[in-house]
Image (cartoon, rainbow, N blue to C red; front, side, top):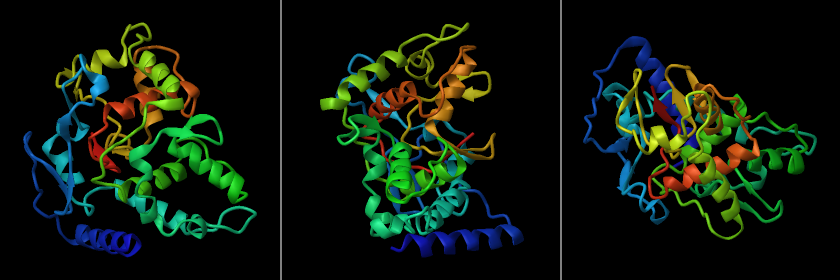
Length: 288
């Protein structure tokens, strides 16, 4: 399947249909399974990875905690506004950038050839001797291979790249490595996950491990899984990256927060991603 033709055809058709008619929504209930476009089966509930023994026995995608209407939006690319970012990301993939006169497509045999990227990141980068996120790797390609300027972390262009990489990996199980040289960074992320922050004295675990399924204000707390990132947040009307969500969560505890792309958030992303090992990649997902 050619993703460029598929995305362009589907999104153009969606725009025309939306202009003339409103289709009857497809509602999902709490026990529904996520199947995208009627063909991509997504694992949204599975046994927790071994390293979560004593903490969780089962892991669940944030999709299971959303309203029926929001769930339905993700079930069809016509209705998923995050796919517009994936389409832009695909165009960026084919666009020459920088002084070397290269596009991403000059080095990679189509974006589909990178389907293994999203399920395995963050990961250890031997050459840099550090854990790298997808956005860090993209910036290395931009600056070191293409002679282009680095993109700001969680910028619109960067999230478009991440969205198209996620879209071609949908249905593939998350499989983030936490052993070997990445282990120390993973341990740092784990410590941060259980550290209380701010005037409210809350940790990630207080909400997403101990109280998932409960309501906090108007929000139905999920397990805080990252398999759906980047996510299209309806309240923000745009794609959002994992680090921006981390920043917002810590800010909401009334604490000084960290910057997207910081070593603290790289470590936290590695740890949180590993908590979702076994769930399917489903980005760009839709959340309230």
